[in-house]
Amino acid sequence: MEDKQEPSAQAEPPKDKEVVIVDVAEDVEKAKLVHTKVFTITWKNRENGVVKTGTFTATRPGLGTLGKIGVLRAKLNGGLPVDQMTDSNHSMMADLHHVLTDFPDWWRPDEFFTAAPLWEVWSHVNSWLATFRPRNPG
Image (cartoon, rainbow, N blue to C red):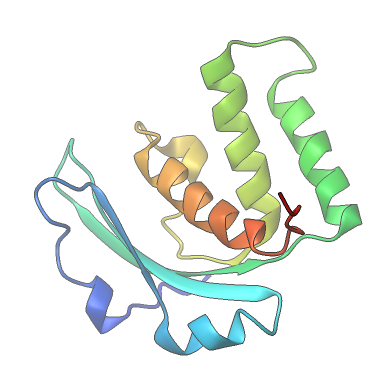
């Protein structure tokens, strides 16, 4: 996948933040009508100071994709009960593996030594996906 960069996301994150996410402006309105979301992130690795920036595209998963997510999560867990942190990381990795349809070359969460970018991207995408869920009154 091509490592696209947006001007607003190229600056280093503030000192108190490791990961910064910026929605691509034109995508904000389109997201209400279509089932894709484009956003950029800037991640400053706290271990080595390297700053990575990239553009991601997320696509709303259908029933078939939701099934694939469940299968991948089970495979990552080895079909065995695992601790809560491992299960959580595997769940986020499975979700993003199938929901992210475009991402920079450096996006390889299984090679990260910190869960910060995984958590931030998953949280951003999950918040967007929640907008499709029906609201229950009262």
